[in-house]
Length: 256
Length: 248
Image (tube, rainbow over all chains, first blue to last red; front, side):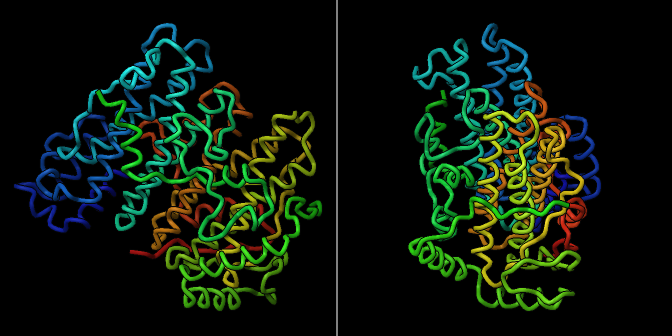
């Protein structure tokens, strides 16, 4: 059970976590927490305990909250898109965006459950980005542009945080499992928009989302020289990470 | 089992390419650590039944032991190298003997994917240097390369296995640079999964279908090395062995 693993990881970061639980045995907490998590009910009490139990500067919690911010953004974006009459027409669009929305909402729920009371509140979003995309929920093309940008950013954002989870193996696994799903979404949205499913060079909009995707050196090896393959193929073969600061710079215009 | 032809994209390198690659390899190996590399080279020799060739191909029936995959980064890299070899060989064959009715778009997609897998394979080979396992001999006898359904169905299975393998093995990697490298590759494998799915089942939810992404949690698959090796063993003529990690 992944949520239990997350708790085990938090225990590694803060070995005293269970000792801080008042009047509650470890087994009891797990039992109730998992039961609630499985039935989809937010474990409020458990969250409060977690919030007390580990420092707010915890690297793991920071990463999870950073991820939660992006998942909030994606989930609300698709929820609004699906609720906007006349925006998504045709079965392919519906199948695609309903499936993606299902996953993004599940990611929000998962991360919120894991963080409990330490979870940040959902920010308010402005998907027009202060007027840069005024027709985001009435023009399918604009909606698709942002969907692709958000998915490709999500892939890069999770990748950029992987090394921060190296000491929390089971949280890392969950993050990787989310990361791979974001990449599936990204590929499908790109395909719908008539692009290849993978990022070749640093082409795409907004430009900041694709900055640095054109590197051909991996691990000190120039892979174009190594293989004789084309630059598009080599850059398409590797997705590049973004730092937290880069991701926040991309996301900030969408915060109300 | 048809004999696989030589990889057409593995063009001979010019001096510049060779020199550059060699330099890169030295840098990479510095990360890897000479001790770890030597250790694996020794254990690789010990575990092979037939006489191993340092950089050549293994022979059908050889046992290739990837060791305890979680115990060393180099073992994880060899595990990834084995999977990338399999994928690259598969798509190379797909492009050499295209299925009936293939169109230009599908050919372009599959050629891109082949090139990605070759790039992954060659990078791991370069990174591992003398610690690399031998070249594997694929066994694709269960695949009908003239059938679109057989080829694309197999492709989706291979890609999904690849994603789950990287997702499951990421936690064994102790060197941040290698973890990020694995991350750079796994998301491309996930992109492949989505696009192949689209070719198999157009306009559906198959690109991130409930069979490969848990509907309730939105999590993609993660498999242990032993689970993955059980799935891929039928596609390799050598006997590919390995154990799950033991990293605490």
